[in-house]
Image (cartoon, one colour):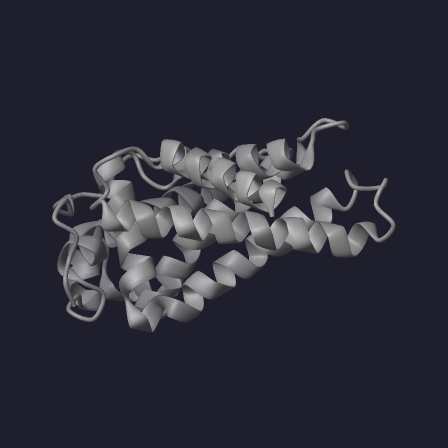
Length: 220
């Protein structure tokens, strides 16, 4: 497979991570496990993006992450499971954002803000975020992971939107239409970002696509 020109080089040690915020404090053991889990994802994604999914071995991931092969398998039985875990982090961010949207938020504003909220959590830098997105979007073996991620996002958006479209005769159907439309716009923005080799920021592209979508549908 070909690689994005701005792919970052993998770190030789797991990057520092922060323990997730929980309503119930985690035990020291649980905190350490979560930190290891997040560090493995970060280190593995950097290597996979730089070298390629098929070309990277689990032994190489374990070496870069600074853990044994056995420890890596305990957290992630397959390479695809690592990418799935990264995608799940994005899904969790989106779900938390839509859950916190205030009553009265317009559907368009909710879609835009929820999808934009995911971007800062993709990676620590824009080149790294682009490399991760390119990996999951352009690796055939990871297509099921990508499609599952978008399906989860769509379900989360539809559920939240159904509570904001109560003036519609069929709020559930309207919510699903709006959610799918939002995901389609996001995927179009991702395709455009990849076409531009990740040089511009993603969020302005997303806003341009969403505005174009709204204008086209309004004029139709």
